[in-house]
Length: 195
Picture 1 (tube, one colour):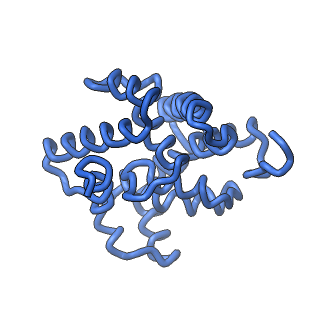
Picture 2: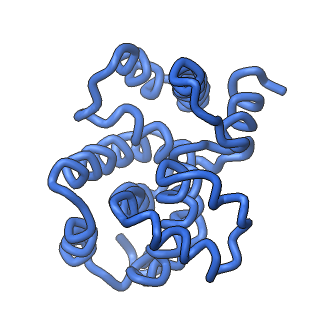
Picture 3: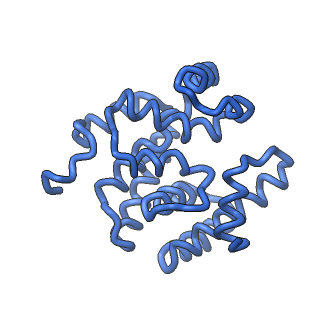
């Protein structure tokens, strides 16, 4: 890492400590798995390994916060109040990025944006956005039908992996008959339906 690539004042060890303090051991193992996958994808596709590492380490930073804290942050920080109708699956990325910025001092917009869209994807995604979105899905600790195919796709075509993940996530949500966040539909329309 050269001196122009400082995205946080925290060294890796301190960042890991601060992240680990925010979550269960199981969640922390997942975070380390996402970091491993993100670094591999960054190396493969020519993204900043440093940014991929940091974004992966913080992507679930707020995942285990109480709903009340998210609701308070949404009201206080000027988020669209429609967000109050959703839940942690959406909040921990979108609202969690504000907490990462405030509590960890990470101001790099590309890292924060990758965190914001890591669960929903987006119609327009940067290389780092796609890496974190896919790494979260394929990390070594994941075990569900189709994950091996997703891993194989991620190695050869990151955009195809984004489409695969989006399609299967949407199918899962439809099967569960839960409300689908509009940005998830936008991601599907762009990456799967190609509209």
